[in-house]
Image 1 (cartoon, rainbow, N blue to C red):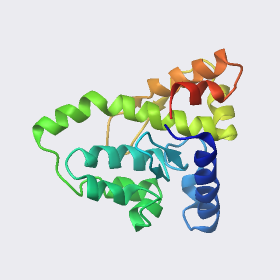
Image 2: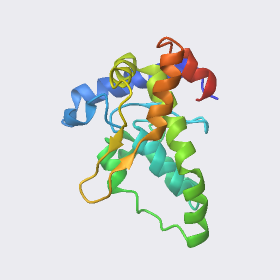
Image 3: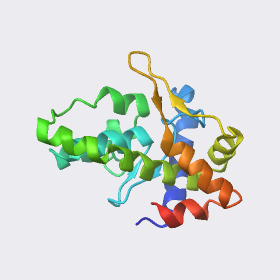
Image 4: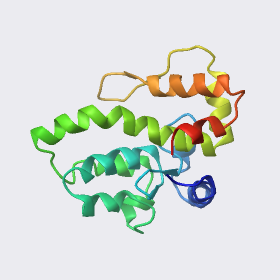
Length: 172
């Protein structure tokens, strides 16, 4: 489990990078592509998308998966979430690993989101401002996906009066 201080430090570095980069469009607080997150593996990632793709790739090639971390210094790890998406096919998962990924992907997404929303006050405010709305993620060439994990986090935050410690205690 990562401590909150290291997650916060990684966030500060990532935000400074985002402000100085040409990818400022990727810094919108409700998007999964803008924020440094910590993972239970002990690595720090620039975005939830990096965690998602890196964890999936680690099922078959842990060395390649490290490229998705900020710690690696690799351009993929330093890039925005779109960069992580573009490199999602660096390795091919065999059918049995695809099944394994299907069983764990929601937990990975929830864990990464816990880290992000625990560290970012603006993201928490935006999430809480959605009230009781269903939260959907739309992609240009895919089916919309309901982000129930964010609805769960929103409920946890609301029950804790917006206290981010509620997320840290149950996640990253």
